[in-house]
Amino acid sequence: MDLTNLYTSLSYILPEIAVSAALILIVALDLIFNKDKRIIPYVALFGILLTIYFVIDQFRISGFAFPASDANNFYGMIAVDHFGAFFKIIILISSFFIVFFSLASEEIQKIQEKSGEYYALMFGMILGMLVMISASDLVLIYLSLELLSLSSYVLAGFTKLRDRNSEASLKYLIYGAVSSGLMLYGISILYGLTGSTNLYVINSVLQGPNINVFTLAFSLVLIFVGIGYKISAAPFHFWTPDVYEGAPIAITAFLSVASKAAGFALLIRFIRTTFVTLVDDTSGYWHLVNSFDWKTILVIISILTMTLGNFSALWQNNIKRMLAFSSIAHAGYMLLGLVVFSNQGLIAILVYFFFYMFMNLGAFLVVMLIANKSGSENVEDYNGLGYTSPFLAASLTIFLVALTGLPPTAGFIGKLYIFIALVDAQMIAVAVIALLNTVVSLYYYVRIIKHMYLSKAEANQITIVPDKFTFALVLALLIPVLVFGLYFTPIIDLAKNCITILGL
Image 1 (cartoon, rainbow, N blue to C red):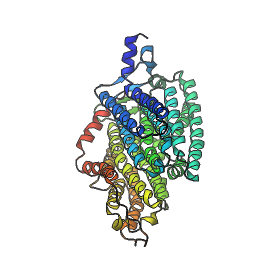
Image 2: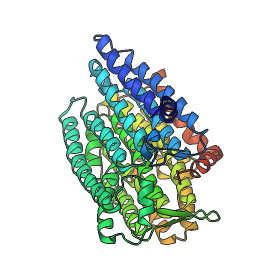
Image 3: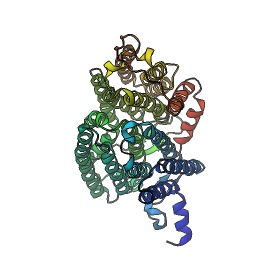
């Protein structure tokens, strides 16, 4: 590899290089400023902004997938395209907000002397997610998944302020280790069947007649266990409520949006690159190889995920745990956009995820601000909050209405496009099941609103008045939820542009 080719190749991974450089700088500053760590969060913010700049620059690329035979271009291990750039933007915007969450979180401020390790682990997660989104080789997919997972295991129990922090980290590690091992076993079987770990090469091999269908199905089920675990799809979701409840709220919010986004990007690229043989230019529907019935599997998984998530959330009194099951249900809704196997369904997923980022982060932010003052996440402690803390109560109400998918919020637009994709694919029965699940979700979201406005406040109810910083932070998430509910055309246009190039 000569220097010219090396420079060209590295120019395609500038976002990952920027995150790596920021991680190294954070570790160095942590060692230099041993007593005063106040500069580290601002270095983290600058690193994220620089990475966003490089990702935006990738939107100029019309689409690029490295050939597997070219040693000068990473042997086909990465793909650079608009689809990947879209999900990277979601992850980086989420990360940007999570840094501010951490500055506002009393849990994180209590371990300020460990902020160097905290932000280094956060950037380890970001690096793993960015690489995972671009990975088009099974080896790189597994390595990036492990980098993401190992960092998140530690962050889940990082504060060690309560027993449940360590419990969350341990459960996360155990579930993660099992799913990771199963995924690696599936990858080894798929490699044995096809003779390659490159997704493009595997695609061409699967179109041949000499594939053992049973062995292929077995390997793909194992691989899906690893991906399904990362997106909290049932029945691989069991870790989610315990980890979300036990982890610091800032990390819970990060896992619920950024980690899930990376998992969905991985699943979509894996199926789209490995199994799609043709995309109909007229209808936009994908034609898949006949060796594995992805449609049936994903329909069952998506229905199971949204149903279990919604019905489990009905009985929760802990708000974080309720939002965890809500997050599981939303994973089910987004999987519906994939089961139609069309460009319209992919547009729906991108739009849904972009809006989900704002409304879910917003809900967790308000819960965190209330927990900072009250020390509680129990729904009973929200009684009368609408009168003692009107701004936070009104904001949480809007975020919950958006998560339900009601107008005039951005959440309605996200679900509308999912239903449009299902109806266009004539999957009416699935659309009806999703609609009924939305009705179920309305109950547990409205239950919180009922406690805030219709239940009598306790005599010692705390009045929570956010300071200027947290007030601005809530508004920064609240305004997009309302604005995009009324004017969403730019996001739709961006999503349409980002589904046209996926390296095929």
